[in-house]
Image (cartoon, rainbow, N blue to C red; front, side, top):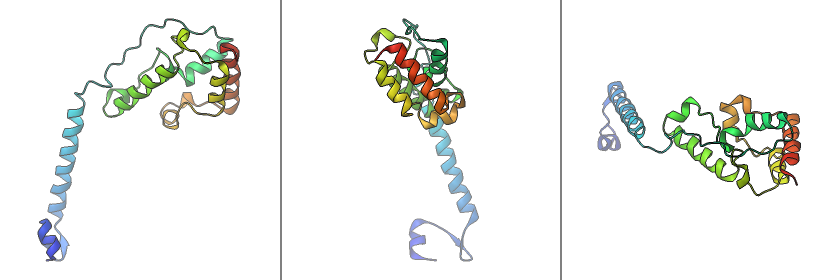
Length: 163
């Protein structure tokens, strides 16, 4: 047996690592991981999926602008968040909660009177494709906007919020 293997406690059988030893090591690792995942479900952050009351939406320039904004933006930028199944399971719930909290702080279509920036900034963000993030579009295919829809939304937000 190799000296390093002896120190690590690895048992060799016929020049190979014992399959039983590998099995139990993997089993223990899976058990510890399962225990940790079960334990973190008890942490409160990411479990409060309330949607505050909608106080004031913008005066939309058209129903189409609102429909595009609702499809691509409302889950993170409004009080009308639709919470997906994975938002109930930590650690994904922590990431979803963090993104919604941050999105509502930056721009909340449900509390429009708090928004101070003009439509030009919103139009620029939409045209540059800054949001929604790639991982959100991957999990929510309805949030994917075509280039034409992105341009339409940018024009609509400019008309809605002013320059």
